[in-house]
Length: 291
Image (cartoon, rainbow, N blue to C red; front, side, top):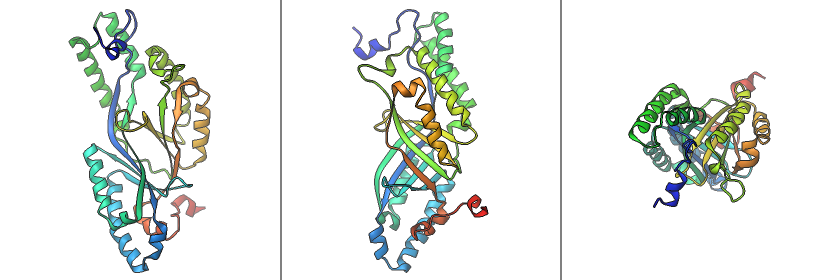
């Protein structure tokens, strides 16, 4: 007899396999920290300068490897570090490197978020699963698995720039985690895959309208962290975060099935400007200087 979990993945004759394909890329770590300002102010200026001189090159090296430092607005923290890397091992090495700096004595990491860049292939999955169904192939049969593997490899090659991006250079970031509802009344995961594909297509149309003003990077965290996805929005005008997320509230997939966690907004701080930040001066970017 099939277990309950196995039964849920057995398709009714004529229905498509319910689990959409995904392709994954960079491993991603967000680190949120508070800065111990009272202890920092007690230090002599020479000692503060020494600590900054040690930490800045470390941050610069991480920055060149696709990390970014942000100064967080509001009470939720002081600093946000975002790291894109090839593996979890590389992310762990970053944690160890930062822990060895004297600056870490003045940082209290309050939250973190671990995930991988994920592209959900709803449209491609529906087309492929229909074709395989029409050919009479059973899910997870050798022939079915071979067709899926070949399709996934083509997608990975085509989507490589999106799977392994640079950290966008925008001045502002907005990060938040999110889930899809799995409650008794509304459960995203019990909808037929064609219906989920339709709703995600409509959802994506909104994001594409903002493509010129905001960069969105979605990461998957099922099995890695407490939420199912993490969302990073990068823009030079923070007002676009409000406009984009507000408009998305009105589409079906968000209005009915989405749950959102805490929003974190930060201002980009180049590693070379760490000293200015710790002197209480927010670094000004080139565009602001021109104004």
